[in-house]
Amino acid sequence: MPEIEIPTYVLKEISFDEIYPVWDKRLWPGRKSKIEPMSSLVWNSRLFLSWGNSEIKKDSSIFDKYEPKFFAFVIDDEVVGVNSGFRTEDSVYRSRGLWVDPNHRGLGLGQQLLTQATKLAKEEKCKVIWSMPRKSAMETYESVGFNKIGEWLDETVEFGPNAVAYKYL
Image (cartoon, rainbow, N blue to C red; front, side, top):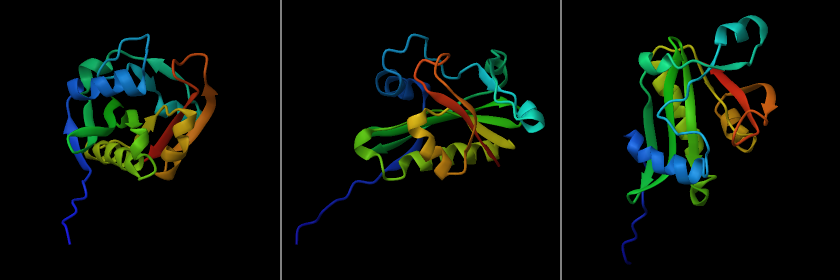
């Protein structure tokens, strides 16, 4: 019987330079705004806890306070799934830039990339993780415990509709 080699997905940390082409060409093709390692969008979790607020604001001070981490699933030296994470407050973490190659969807890679972001959030002693998934990806987020809050945003986002989703850690 001939040997058959089955390729293995490897989850590894990558750099911004490695994730950028995927975000630029695959996740956000034709994006008008510049793709940065982090987004200045922040969600005030304290207002949510008090009043259910899902308002998103910009706060560029997070660039000086926190460092993003980038990670990917790779198979045979090809990046087939990516995500990143960073704090937006001392105890609040954001998952950003989730993408899985259409040829590798339905295998749980998106869930594992979100689980990795959650693991990093816990390592950084965060109490909640949030994201702004597209409507088409919400099921993946919900499958690992994220909850949608607020309305779908379409007018104010480039690749919407998106909504805020969060998960307590």
